[in-house]
Image 1 (tube, helix red, strand yellow):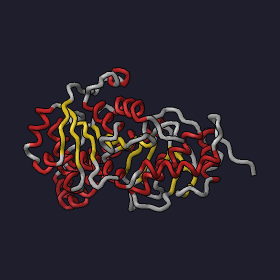
Image 2 (cartoon, one colour; image 1 turned 90 degrees about the vertical axis):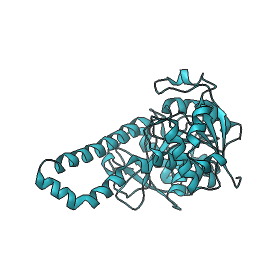
Image 3 (cartoon, one colour; image 1 turned 120 degrees about the vertical axis):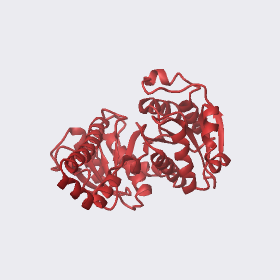
Image 4 (tube, one colour; image 1 turned 135 degrees about the vertical axis):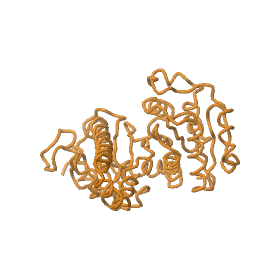
Length: 352
């Protein structure tokens, strides 16, 4: 990799607009001084936002994009907007002009564009959307797939496990991440045939740089006793939205409880440091930056409502994956399951 990797930024994505995107990228630049950026979007608006960030302006190139992918655009509509900021950012990765792309825009459109332009890596049937979720343990947990693939067979789940473990080795600095499959129970006979087949294959793949620990259930996601949780996109997205909703429910419930009486307000003052810690731990901006794993290039999705700190975290994720060459790592790890895959869609264990 170049000593000064370049990241393509879709400056027009997100709910908060160009100003917050540029503030977040500038914040990330202070953390990764060697980074350089190509900023795609409305040139006049980008230049105006950069007036407050001379350090970022000196490290950036602006490319005017006349179109924008709207939040309500269907993927089939979005991919026809060839001169949108999102499309041009991904095209820069495909052309080798940038090593990664970061966008806060329409998730479905970003997935469709990235898959169409970059294609999946050799040995990967489908890309997966992976993100970091907070836990009670020392580390966050990598979870995938979070919505890119609603239906998955055993082959897909095994590939997701390999890609998620590669990501965890970088993001969590682990040699052998603990991997589990999401299931309705922890017993070996539980779950669909696809999940049980995937588990059998992962148990047999002892040469992989991961530790397969069987199954986990939805209520164990935040326990911190696993590093990678693998699921089909439908179940993973439901679990993610449920966890986010529960976090908001708890914080809102506490806010209501602490303002219900004078005694409660006094209790809040006493517990304010603990509440601040809880708010920090549950703040999605501190875990922002979902990754499309399995593509021939790095694409990071920032949450649409992310603030400048959240955008900076998404850029940080892209920078780390570039620095650690995630694509090469996944390609190398895929060789570890070649002997365990069948040419048909159904995976089979080798004969004993």
